[in-house]
Length: 235
Image (cartoon, rainbow, N blue to C red; front, side, top):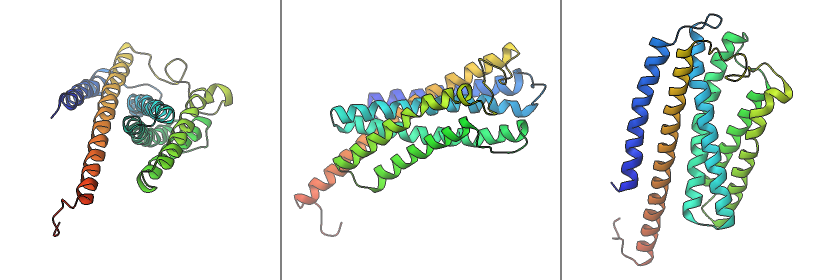
């Protein structure tokens, strides 16, 4: 294990400790919210996972811009890893959101502006990954995927400001009404959850970038071995 992989592995371990503290604060310290009841505790996963999705999308955006300006394997791997994070955490957002909505609105899904734009972003990054995994690894495919990565990031401000611009049923959490953070312990639990998700997302991003680069080097070495007839006939 090289030094960078060790650092990211330690970060994963640190995120595990942070998640443990978060669960303790959420379920044993933070009080149950009076209106939503126990369902309100979904908030401590839903909001930080949306933030982690933003981190992944931002990484994909930065890697995509870097690849278009100066094509290289590192930038492409960084963008791909960011898209993977955006899909994983976006799926968590779209899972926990309807669970909250069923209690708050009486049904799991409405075409609320924030819900719709969040779904659109996840679909864009899912399309990015499908393109990168099944459309070949040529420069044209990578450039087209980079354009998708930039397009997905362009939707992030729309998600953020959709509640203010187009109203809808989604609450303006944390800074406005609907977050249920009336007690200091609730704020502490949410802050720790943000920290845990941030460390976890950064560690996953680093490990996925390292893994992707190692996979590409191995594939290149195998291709070179085949070209030089270094592979046994029975392989």
